[in-house]
Image (cartoon, rainbow, N blue to C red; front, side, top):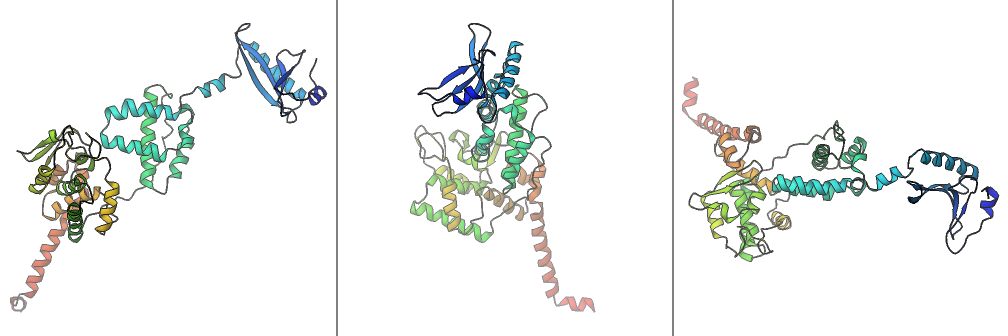
Length: 392
């Protein structure tokens, strides 16, 4: 039977799918579903007799004619006879390593093994919040510059988040090239310009500092907030330490005799934090938990405080400083140091900056004490009765 339009059109559905095969072109046929839908296809074996049977869909009857389907089937069967497999590309795509696959490997074998804890947290947040499933499900070799550019643009409401996502993907694809997941020099993040970001510097004024201390004292007195969170915030502002340096502080790092914290790891490597009396007193006052190595312990046994953001949002609202981040407490420490006449190199050493340019952001504050001093001298000279005689 040679399949033609009339035969295919008259063929009715059955309770189960069935096939009509063409006797002239071996392997060419039509599949008829119980719904009546009819689909042209070819059937072939990989590796000859005894090999795996495979079927390739050509088109739906009505959308394509029987003769058009026959012509396409003949072309495909000819390619198969020459050793090709029409389904090879589909198999490759189905079995391809996806972006989600390489992210999981990248995070476990590189990020968690080699990068600082705060970097790990940042990368995890980027993956969770800013990389959509449409990108994660793509074969890693299929991601193009256009895909990354569209994602970067879609996050333009927050230039910082968009740029962090671009930086993460650039690191990821460089790693993919290094370990053979993509060909060399194919990083799709190349030539995508970051958004311009306006640097933020927020310092607490003396009045705001006073309100914050008052609210922290109130939280402690009323026991409305864990003592670990209250004292961690106090120590951050008293030392200028980074959030993760304090949250992950272990008793082993505390040298009470010398009044310092010896951190084996930080954003810039091993670091010594010098404690003033107030900060040292707060740390000493923290109760120790059995089998918990952390100074600022959390709710889970053996673990530090995991997240202070919810508590901080409540505290800063009560203190009327709702635009202040926890990291701004570090800036406040630096601003107070500058206003008290300390040199920028000294402040950089206290904060653990590895580059002088990082501390240089506070340089403009150093002029304030000089301006104030000059103003006081000017006022006194203008008020001096002898000034008039000197002018005469």
